[in-house]
Image 1 (cartoon, rainbow, N blue to C red):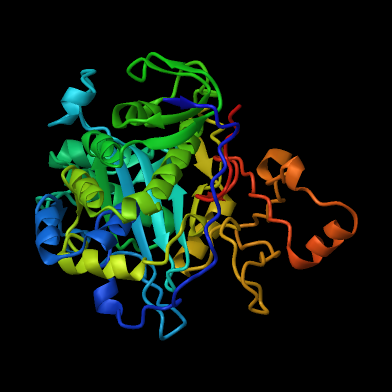
Image 2 (image 1 turned 180 degrees about the vertical axis):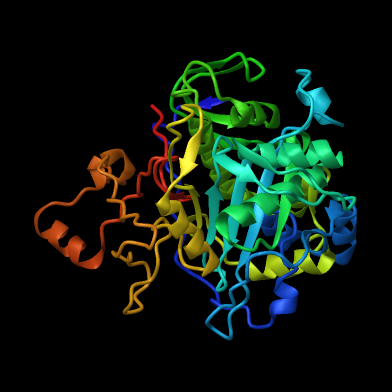
Length: 451
């Protein structure tokens, strides 16, 4: 369905927030608090109940990542605030395996499995920030030797694409769990950041997840014709994408209307799609509907693989409580800083700025300026105007007048009446416009223009 909405403007939620620390959850509990990825856990808040949790967690394929990865890992940095929870760094992956239900969805004869979508999800110790950091699949890296789920070891690789890590694990270990273990080991080697675990969602899970929500609304700024993405055809405008179409859009890389046909462009579109999904899950229509929430969670867990320290009833309930104040404007998306590889034009290299991002990640500092923070004097809603440690500067408010609400002619005031009105009211702040893929953005920012 295509609507006539002139542009995609994400509404900015209210400023009411809860406690910045969940003091009741200590380190040993928080270490087990990632249930089913960001959006799934938020929906779990409204489902509740041990019976539902048992049913959902029994769907999950789990592996003991901490034991298999051993002791030779980056050091975990403790929070400076003794009342804070532990920050969490979770590796999220989208698997393109054609096994099981996926073969019916994408039957193109491709063998093996890769993680064509990989993000580090950082949840700050005070639970005020959730930051999603994409790692381009075409990043030139070295892959270390990795453990498999059966206790074996993969061979190391040199000068390969990042997504070769997941493929190497699957090829050697014979399962998705081994692929995820190798991806996690590789990311820890690149970043020197200890990850708290991983979550993998496959094609079938993603499609069912979107359908369980009743679709996802997204602005498509250009006409799209992508034969290699299962003949995806979309006209420019605001669309309500069902699960099948959303999956095609997430996978689309080459075709008309897809920019330079690179993986980097696809990452930007995937980030926008995930931001839209987060808005949908956090909307009143989903959170107030236990039936829809449970259906959504069942769809997610039915096609999910994760490290076993997250796949527990206690973990689901703990993170659901911990993340209860997350809003679209506190969820940020960005891509690891890169340059094109001079030795391979199809690949990219991580830059020195990426090293700064890893350091911020390790020490629980903001990864970008996307999430607005309280100013030093404690006034709510004021933007911190300093640059973050990654060198990103604050974005200007959108210049486009369409982003600013305008009064109807018959309600406008003039003269003395207008002066009096100005004293009693403040002009609403325009919603920011950000360029997905080039800038960090939140689920409350405008990233695409339709109409």
